[in-house]
Image (tube, rainbow, N blue to C red):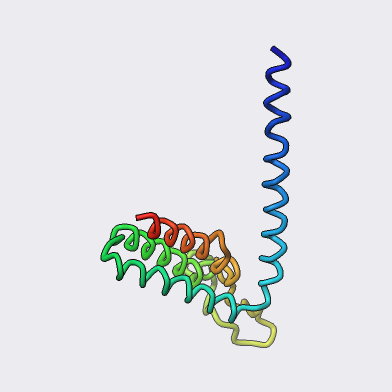
Length: 136
């Protein structure tokens, strides 16, 4: 009985190692792309246009596209929303500083631009949808 469990664990070890190596390589390139916002968004626009062209060519994927639109709208709302909602935060007076001694609170996004773009948010969804659109 013990031999069966240990064989299963050792058989999964190369797969886990491969997944870890792929993840590290992916994270390396993701970190290298962080300062290049323009190129990231150009790539995203190219992927989105490929998906749109595929949907137009096939004349389908309306439900999937609708779901993508809702997902992207949710991300956009998170990107445009402040981290701390000023209406929920108790304040005694005006929200903007009126004196030099008042504290200035800059606008901090709930969802930063890099996370909004990152493959776990937007690009991963676009790649999955392009794959689904290609397998008809």
